[in-house]
Image (cartoon, rainbow, N blue to C red; front, top):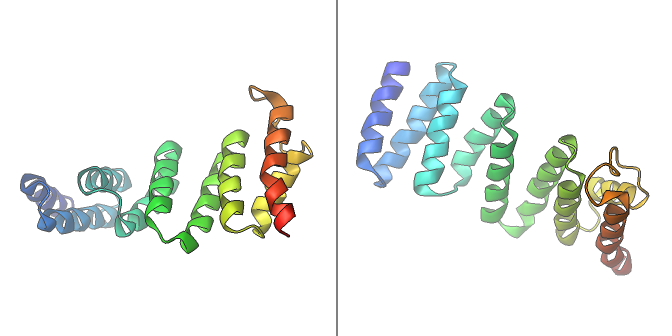
Length: 168
């Protein structure tokens, strides 16, 4: 599979931004996955996004590979790009995933902001409400260790929850 993927990818790169090149690059990425070379598949898919812009079909292949490779900054960037291109009703679960990843990375401020976006779209989202309410009470792990401390996170959580509670 590797030699075939190399050949297809090489021809696709020569075609530049022709529509045929996009399809060839997708095929090359799939072949790289079949050849058990996820890093090479990631490289092809990232090149595809850089060349042709964000696209759901590419993200669908790329996101699981980024998770498997533990490439967190790239995963977050890809999820953010996906959130920008999907329909508004599909955005909340993607933003919730971004928030979850940020929380696991101990980026409590980033998680709080992502959950704020979730609550703006889906005020009843239980995970988002639970996280923001925990921040309000100062009970998110490590919430006092970031610059600005727990007080700033609690204040931001209060700002996020106020319109949610007022609308309820």
